[in-house]
Amino acid sequence: GELEAKSSVEIMGPQGTRNYRIWNMTIQDLIDEGTIVEKGDFVASLDPSELTNNIKDAQLELEKIESQFIQTKLDTTLDMRQARDELINLSYAVDEKQLILDQSRYEPPATIRQAEIDYDKAVRALNQARENYKIKRDQNVAKMREVALNREKSNRSLQGMQELMKSFRILAPEDGMLIYKKDYNGRAVKKGSQISAWNPVVATLPDLSTMISVTYVNEVDIRRVKAG
Image (cartoon, rainbow, N blue to C red; front, side):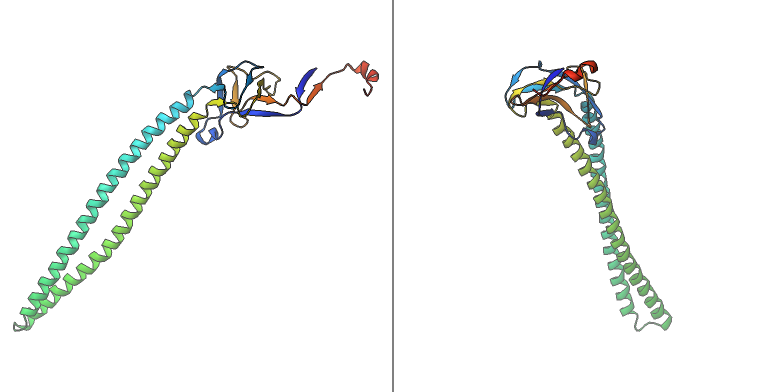
């Protein structure tokens, strides 16, 4: 049989690795079983290779999105500047047609009518340009909002992975004696073993004040077992 603690503290590996599609982690280093540790002492480290590769990919992706953000900002700025220049030019055109119309009051009716038509066309063109400007502005605001959200999302993901990397170095959560955890096959989890993202327990710190004896007795001897 075995003697084990009734309760123990689990020394946990990184939490949230599934958010970055890391399902298993290899224990790169682990102190010896039975070592007395104090809170904050080094216990284990995990192989960071997969996470390191993810961070590199995220950095490249962020650089790409940052370039898209800058390009979109330049494009929309130029687009809106051209639209404002068009409004100014059309406004001048309206003033010009208005002046021609005012000066044509003593001209023949046909000339006056042509001046009125030209003025109406200029006014309609200005009003249409103003409506188009509002639509274009809303479209460009939406474009900038989209690339800004993508940049923020990518940056948050990168920062999350960089923060997660710190937890690949595992420290004792409290004082105690380190005991290796057993996997579902009853084998000790030690250096070189893998831990799952769903149950990232590296080792345990048992409470030695209350122990349990897990003992196996042959069936033929069961009758000989009595209380006390």
